[in-house]
Image (cartoon, rainbow, N blue to C red; front, side):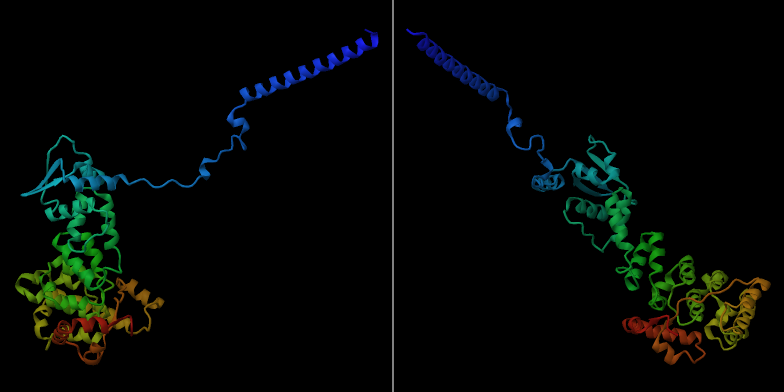
Length: 380
């Protein structure tokens, strides 16, 4: 074999050997890649999987609703609440969820006795019914005992809802405010009494015309006579209202005469009316009151204020302030004045005696709805 042929054959073998080595190397690399690469390495946007951008998950069922539904199905109970002779079968877990009072009670107790003077049985029933109901509605009937019971049991959510309703002047004003006042008086809830009194404006004289007024105790009457925002035609009606209450049982109530008269701003009376009261002639039923010497002295002191006040178109003048300072008077401010066309027609230009006032109250009682709609506030 020639040297050239041998050299050519050797070159071919070398090329085949190099090619085989290259293919083996490529095959090994491919196998290495398949084994070593993970899913995170071959997926696009690795490490940038944004979980928060996924669609919102469906809401799960509310645990409270599930408990209530289960309770209603099983009608089971594990605690007996007793108020006087009344017994209520309840779920302690439900009571604990809303009431801090019950949250402190042991689960081993089987009977819990509550003080009937602290919580009314009907109120407890309403409170528990509110707990197990999905509705947040509160009935108007029995609102005060419901609030008292919720405060006693420390049901803060219910207490807050009750107060939100009571403080809503769109619901409680005028006649509705007075009805709630009476309810609060029955339950001796003085804070609500005071709040509702301030909401009674245009129908103040309607209240005076009722039998409720003469049955009030002295402190209640005093509170009513102290109000600034009560609707009256003139300050003399405060005096007449006090007289109506006193004369209803004069023998028993005459001891309160001056305490109530001090609530009347006699200095705002025209001086001629004070003269009539001081002379005590033809004053009818008021004569018994006006015999009192302490009241006469109070009227005499008020005369000076009335006369000097009438000298000024406005009591803002510095000279009027100087008069108050020199003689030791406190400035008297007028209350809220109503405009009643009926009163304007029949009584404004008359002497407007106590008998006239009583007749006016009779008209109000007979025409309560018309009266409340025809009067206006702050109209001169």
